[in-house]
Image (cartoon, rainbow, N blue to C red; front, side, top):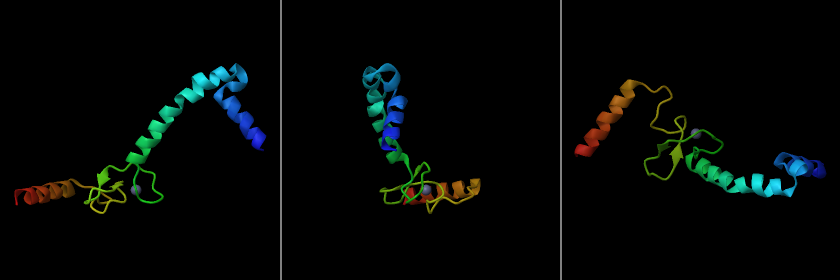
Length: 96
Ligand SMILES: [Zn+2]
């Protein structure tokens, strides 16, 4: 089983067909790129446990990022009325 996975990995990375130069020039050279994707994904992902949606809404304390579904201030069915109300509230808070 483990040998099959290793052989599949070698085939997947191109080592079986083109030798180890394919490893260094191909898959290995892309590893930093995968790392960048992982960091960006961790920054953008909703912080609610088990949720894998993109989170664009910050919590009031600014510590967490949540998706539309999990953020307490964003309703499930977003309407123009809610957006306008939120705008008026923010403006009133700013003017104080
Ligand atoms: Zn979420």
